[in-house]
Image: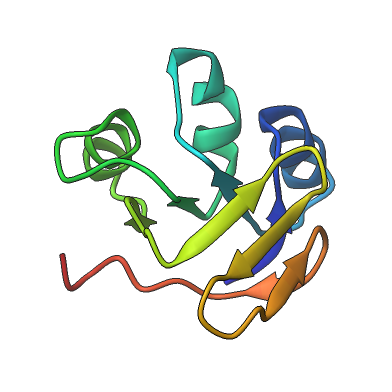
Length: 102
C-alpha cells in the first residue's frame, strides 16, 4: 500500500519524508533501482517473471506486479489507466498491489 509515483526520484523523495509509495513504470531498468529500493512495491505494464523488476523485487522481498498488460502506464501524464474500464489512477492516489500469487 502506498502513494502512486512514476519516477525513481519521486519514490526516493517521498520515502525520505516517511511516506509509503508504489512505483509504476512501463518497464524498469537499472537506472530505476534507487526508486525501486525506496518503493513499498513495484507495478509495471511490461515484463514477466524474469524481467528486471521481478528479479530485483524478489531479491529484496518487495511485492511486484509486472507485465500487467491490462493497464497503460504513462510516466509523462503520471497516470495508470485500466484498459477495460478506463479507470484512471493518478500520481498521489493510494493503491495496493498483491505480488504474492505469481
